[in-house]
Image 1 (cartoon, helix red, strand yellow):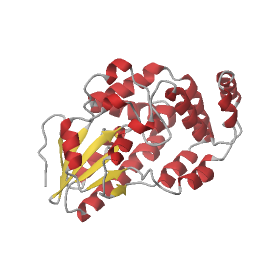
Image 2 (cartoon, rainbow, N blue to C red; image 1 turned 60 degrees about the horizontal axis):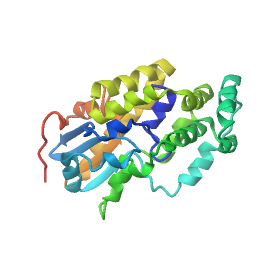
Image 3 (spheres, rainbow, N blue to C red; image 1 turned 90 degrees about the vertical axis):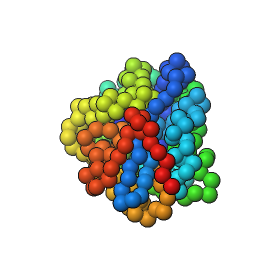
Image 4 (cartoon, one colour; image 1 turned 60 degrees about the vertical axis):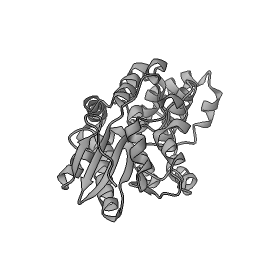
Amino acid sequence: MSTTRRCWMFVGALVLFFSQPLWAKQPITPVFYQVQYQGKTAWLLGSFHVGKAEYYPLPAQIESAYQHAEALVLEVDLRDPNMPKLIQQYGMQPQPIDSDTQTVLSNYCRTIPICSQLAPLSPWLQAMQLSVMRLNQRGYSSDYGTETQLMKQLGQRPLLALETAESQFSMLASLPVSVQWAMVRDAITAPDSDIDALILAWQQGDATALAKISEDELREQGGEEMLQRVLWDRNRVMADGILRYLKQADKPLFVAVGAGHLVGEHSVIKLLQQAGASSTDCQQQHCQLAD
């Protein structure tokens, strides 16, 4: 996956994604699992952080599971009041720019005056803002991200988090500067076909394709170390958090995390199984609601 696509999979409120209009009219079947652990149940949905109105309502099985859930569990609480402070701390760290990136950025920004406002930002945040600008022009909005839509239906139920905004921002800020500038270049130059493959895999719940996209190009960008930091370590944090919340729950939980975290041999699902949980792929067979 390009560095830009990699970040789209876990930076919730900052990015948008591209999808062909034809696809938006087709039924979507995102990855969706039922997990049972020590007599407790959790529903796990592979999310995308933004989208279009045509994606909703979600399939009836997902909507019903959510309505019966005791609480919503997300990667992070997007209502975190410390978000502006964290952006200031981790996103306002300008770095010397290399000549290749400067050329790409200068050429792109000739027709987009707002680009001049990016210089004070950290390269990773510049990449996110460029992605927002590029894709917002196509009519996509964070208002239609999976998490945003779920939060609108939350009611009085609790919202729980598996990570913190600070942990995500600090991880991005800790990426090598060369990788961060590559993110900027990718945000500008990545072909639509790269994004198409990712979106189609999400819409079809294609776990094999999602895993390949999530892992192969992470490995290409930074080897096993990058896979460990960006994906596998965070999967462990998420799995541990789900188990912790399950032990405390009286009724089923509804968990929504980026789809890339639920697929592959080191996925959250695999980690939960290793911890003694059982799982059912609810797109392969109908899952019964649990009280």
